Image (cartoon, rainbow, N blue to C red; front, side, top):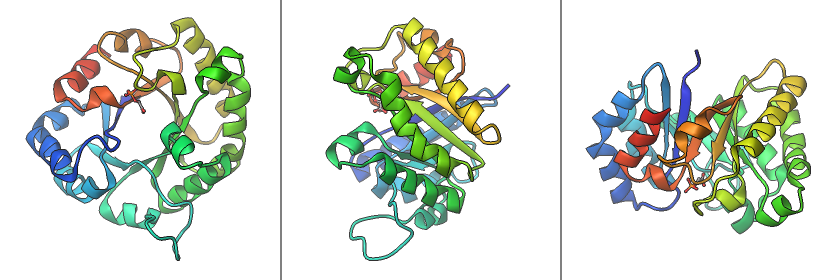
Length: 247
Ligand code: PGA
């Protein structure tokens, strides 16, 4: 059986010192959570990547970044190369998070280019997709997800593996979670999309948006769901551990 994935997105919630202390103080406990059953991926703010990569080197805990440049190299002030992530020891990278789509106006095409950079250096992309509240209410979810997936599927054809995280924007950080029956339908549809378009690529599906210890067990039972992308609840070790223990 494949391990269930728990990817922790610390966003910009912790400073460098805070992220380092959090990881150092809980290092052994994070390592103990990473078993054959559970894959643990920690995604700290970029300034703490080196610290975490060094700290978890040689352990089963993986480290991921929260974003990457869409370009290989060049005059792109403030951006980070996928190659640098590789050199640091990162094995995953989140791209297309709704906070970047919204605040940084990233397009589906930009995100496909980012995926391409990651694939080229052998880093597994964690690609976020999802509809906003308005689109959800207008029942446009499938249309929005299709638009987000189409440019990606062309890029992913050359990948070995990728994670796709379905995160309804209206569920992120709000405490709201869609009905299980709604998610069952979405994940069945997503599974059909990638298995029919990219049968050769190892794609695993994650859910993200207000995952916590009251909803994790139920969410984890959804067919075709292989993991969670966890924001708020990953910032406290005990709540993160509670989620892992429930699945
Ligand atoms: P949340 O964030 O768990 O705090 O809702 C999830 C995410 O943004 O990936």
